[in-house]
Length: 295
Image 1 (cartoon, rainbow, N blue to C red):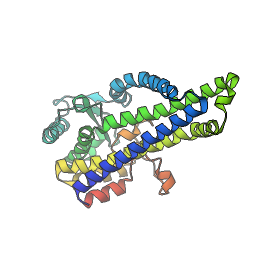
Image 2: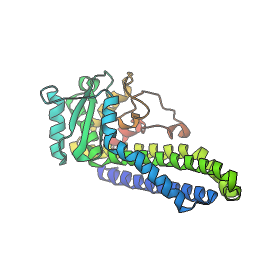
Image 3: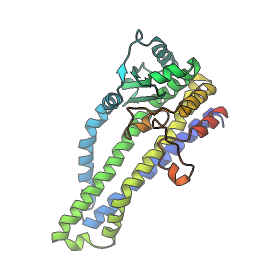
Image 4: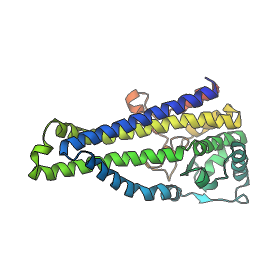
């Protein structure tokens, strides 16, 4: 597979998953609305609540992520090699220079955040700078800049909001089912109520699986897009090998931020079983390296 085919294939797969996500939420809304007799009013109430709770997080989520990971902004004087690498690759990609952050941690890793290319940041660990060569560092930075250029940071924020929306839908449904059962039991009964309760139990898991699937596809896309920028697949492939093999977990990583990093910061050994792999935040490093070296 060449790099252009890889970019096109991963973009297409991402949009297919996003469409399925919208269909899934539409189905939930229909079932919940039919079960409690509120129809589209139900969806409207849930949408307003989800919009209010997610609006603020959309604008401050990057600051929260940087704060929770212990990232500190650095200047060119403080980290000249890192700053110059980000600057040069930003010029090559046509992006505005993102803010550069450093995480004091021996585990090699990196991530990008920000709602758009003009409000973006790249953070790397001190371990990454110490353990990677210049070409490997360029591969990692090109990967993170590709996340910014492809609006992956915004896409993952949107999917996080959709996952939250699914939870809000289920919560409103259960509350309405409880209150309607006291005075409008005929509206809350029936097959839709039964299906709705099943959906309340399963929908958070399904929504999370879709979110993780999107995250994995965007990692493949950022790999391919990064190669388009550096024109050197081996740089990123070699970097991923070192990052994946390093035994040190990232101390400040959490379940909420793990999907942002270039590689799993917990260093868990992923099971080869297809079911277990559905819950992985990242595609297997071996698979990513194999694809990079086939380009």
